[in-house]
Length: 92
View 1: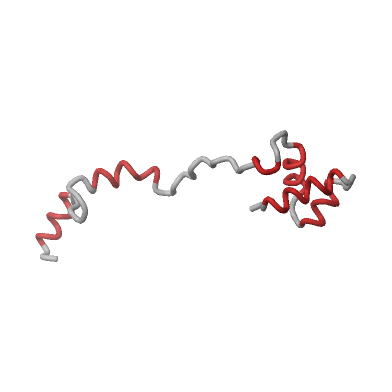
View 2: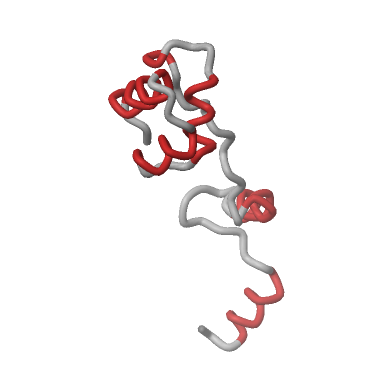
């Protein structure tokens, strides 16, 4: 995360005539980051990160199934009838 101090230093170095590549090398950040902050029409103190969209979860495709199984509440699942029959038959 870029600190306010680093952003101010970027703008000062740019006003002194230093190239974007040299600023990036001196501040140890990417040229695209330097370019974005230098070209921004907002004052240095007003630049903020945009909120990101939530990442998809690996379980998203299975959520309907999971919610259906947990329909009776926490710890009370709907079991497969054939497997329940086998479980009762063999007493496990």
